[in-house]
Amino acid sequence: MADFTRFFIKTLIGIALARLLSPADLGSYRQLFLIYSTLSGILMLGFPQSMLYFLPKAGSSKEIKALVNRTVNVISILALLCAAIIFFSRNQIARSFNNPELSRLLIVYSIYPIFIFITQLYNSVILGLKEPLKSARFIIFSVICDLVLVLGVAFFTRDITLIVWAVVISAGVQWLWATVQLRKYKGSLNRESFQGLKAQLSYTIPLGLSLLIGVLSVQLDKLMISSFFSPEQFAVFSLGAMELPLIGILINSVNAILLPNMSAENPNQMALIYNASVRKNAIFIFPLATVFFIFATEFMVFLYGNVYADAALYFRIYLLVLPLRVATYGIIFQALGRTRLVMIDSIIMLIMNAVLNFFLIKIYGMQGAAIATVIVSWLIVLVYLAQIRWQLGFKLLKLFPLWSLIKNLLAAILPAIAVVLLAVHISNSFWRMILGGSVYMLLYFAIGYLFKVILPYDLRLALDFGQGIMKKLKR
Image 1 (spheres, rainbow, N blue to C red):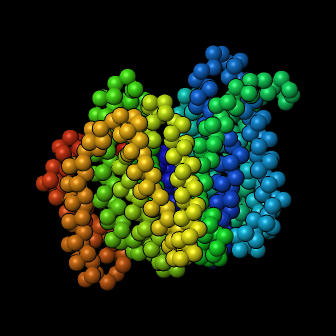
Image 2 (cartoon, helix red, strand yellow; image 1 turned 135 degrees about the vertical axis):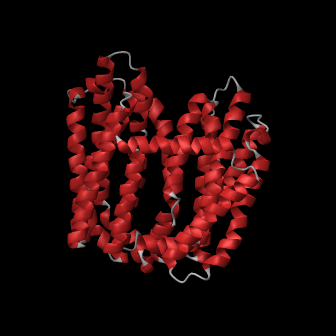
Image 3 (cartoon, one colour; image 1 turned 45 degrees about the horizontal axis):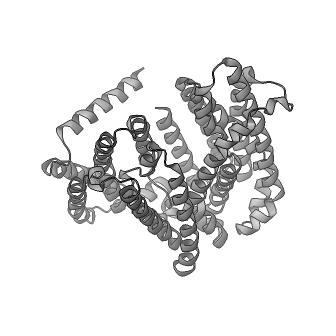
């Protein structure tokens, strides 16, 4: 529920800012977070994630205190470094992003990493200590801070500078919460407090490198668009160049269940579990990809207004990646301890993405960046499949229910024909999306059940899930 709350409130803030700010100011706002996410991906070095590995292995409260204290000290130093890089390179960043206004905003925004690095670490610490309720409370507190401060200032002022100050103040309030909670682990800052850092670095540096490559792969198209186009154009592109966030929550939830139950000692069981998860994921992903493709323009206008109708083009292109999300390919390598292959594949993907982005942007403009990302995403999956077959020795048909996926694809495409014919007779874009989407889902459900894509077991599972959500909401 905490992840869903965060998703909902972050989405609400994004929608509101798109309607309250001019495209130029919205582009600047989103570029600030693009800069932070890229730099933090480089500088964090995987330290927050290392807490999930080291804390459960700590043998005593003394070891836990020493580990947390050392990591807090390191993260604090890295936060100051990130702030200094943003502050002193602000003019160069502004020039490279074709956005002179950014230089002034970065003076204020350079304070942000000093606060938010520690809050990111705190969340990993409490998860590493196996206190998920504390994590959920902190997540909800954080998003409410953003909702009240950022959205409140935006609503009453519509001033981008004051909004950035609100972002920083919200981060500061969250930092106070995290700092108070971490104070019991606080020790002196001296040479002895860094003992054990070498062993920690041996884990965090390879992890950090993989995370860095992942961040750059995700952000590369947006970084290039910022370099080639205006902030107004970037705002349109960045709103469309997204994956459906609910899909990410779904996949992460599935992975959290899958990984602990996948064992290298029992490859047949691994294949069976993986096969079942792919089939279930496809039931959600195929129809969602299709219905959002049909109503992409209506969806963008509904969320962000007519000004951003052009974002639908990029949204549609990125939806072509969604069918790949029926499976998480790297999880097999993780279960078998072959993470080095994942890192090599990530490096290959990053290089291909950079080259293809550069050339296709030159040829096709902003849509070239989206096309490049889709092409590289499909190519890297082919590489994963080849490695799974030839290096890990799995039969792909055991992992992927091919016949079920084909039937599911047909069940997703067939209703689209009827819905497109219906939609042309509905003039209002909102009702076209609502009525057309509802008819599509009903037809998909009927055809899916007829084709035995949706099984009685799936219906019981969905019903149990819905009842579980309702019980949580009533508490």
